[in-house]
Length: 304
Image (cartoon, helix red, strand yellow):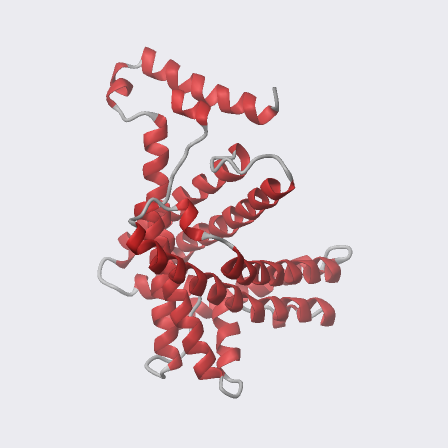
């Protein structure tokens, strides 16, 4: 029995023990039901982040607002709304729920990808995704403090850039720091290219239990969304690689700043507008997943 299987059985056994010894627990939904609910909340939180980030980026591309925003910039916009801090807390919790689902996919093979090369590659991608959303969820709660101290959203965004540059400086100070930073940039580029490849390769409706008449639309949203998300990662990855090559942490920014740099290029507003529309499509597809994705908790956890 592998370590993962042992951990899976231990979690299921713990669930049975709690139900047996603590009567109120018997009235709560079973563990696999809770897992499915948390996963759907997580997909919804992801959809909100990308839909709002895409909409705000589209406003920047049409000069309705000053600067483009990335996924963290959506949190800044949310903080400025009525009851913004409450919404930020709910968004952060939803993203952590999605991180938990990614852990189950990557570690416990919730999607039954298997243990062959293709399966492990998919699960590795899910692990990287979980890490990204963990950073994003942590950033949402950090943004609560930053926004409380900042005078406006642009000040909070500037603080976020400064923090990224501080982290890059700390990485550069390590032995082989330049190589590590270049590797981080190449990883970001790899994630971007991987999303673009997935947009054209994957059959997204296989994981959906949606009505057949709607599956074609859902797949189109997914393809546009993954392509746009991958494209949005590319300029940030280039900045990080250049920072490693030049050993200058000041070149490390955020996705929002990378999109702003893209807009400054010839025809940049049109490209930024298309990217924004794609990010909105990705957010819309995440809501589709929240409603119709097949959520299959690991088999042994269903006993909990």
